[in-house]
Image 1 (cartoon, rainbow, N blue to C red):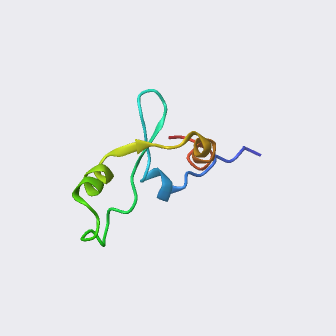
Image 2 (cartoon, one colour):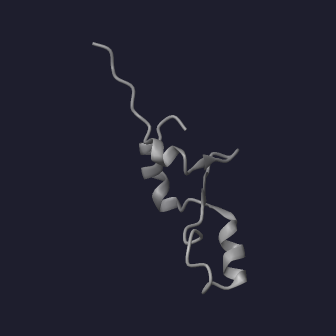
Length: 67
């Protein structure tokens, strides 16, 4: 019997991108609503993307085996 391919978690695949060096890039949270009480500086910094923390990379690679 042939070995089955692993499935990618599509919800995660839509949220993460791989950089040229193989690191995972993500967008920051807390930017969708209740923006009136957040300072302009805080909202501006939330626009920028950031890298996934090293402690989570192993898990992310497991749920997205082909990305």
